[in-house]
Length: 320
Ligand SMILES: O=C(O)CCC(=O)C(=O)O
Ligand SMILES: [Fe+2]
Image: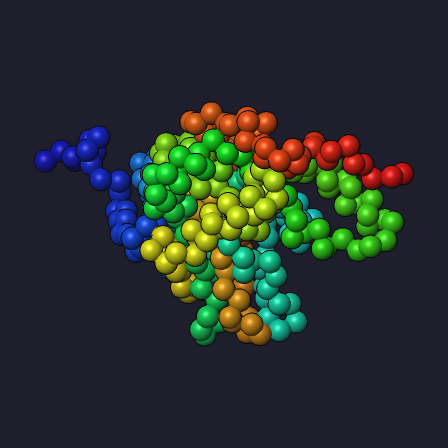
């Protein structure tokens, strides 16, 4: 008998995709990430990433270079402007935390690098050393979180825009002239980014709540009290367990998340034990929304107070 040729309907190689969370999360088996993936397997993984938002591969005993090669199938690798990395490999972040190097800045709900005009498409983390207990990572589907809002609230937040800033990284700069000059260079390079509060996922078309407590500082066009109240309400959505998947790491587990759809929170409960992971980040596009942005002047408070916007300072300016 002649060999059966694969048809369009044939399943992609041996890949198997199993949901592990209600709102997000799937485990993928039957693939070896150390080698070249055929187109069909790759397409299945790409589809799973968009559908499940965070995908988990267990028992992938692969090298850093193999992880990077897998990442590059999805796009260009980017360099985090503030995370420590080796000058030889700036696109690799090594999280190697223990008593002498406590984890920092990841135990806050966030999407990665939303202070950039083009935040990453996704982030890929591979565990090398894991603590005996603790050190899980929480993920929250912000698509499910948007869908969980009442119709009225969905309408209210749609069309709003928010300002994102690299605020947690400001504390990395000392208070001397040289450090302040360096900070100003970063401010020039990464000015506050304005993104829709509800973004449209570029592949699925799903609407996603795109504000996070780590980087989002204000709703454009609102005064501070209103802005704070709206953001508090939206930040809270990520904390709702029904939208979450809690990921438990084992050595050689590789996790890839869609940064356009999710927020995550690294639990720092393993300190002072050791936990070591390697991260690469894949370049994304500028977030957009199907819903036209509301003009900041239209939603500005009627009290006459100036609304928050990038350029509105009511004539105040720092003195030379
Ligand atoms: O350590 C973790 O589990 C996640 C860290 C994190 O926030 C990231 O890699 O973007
Ligand atoms: Fe992160």
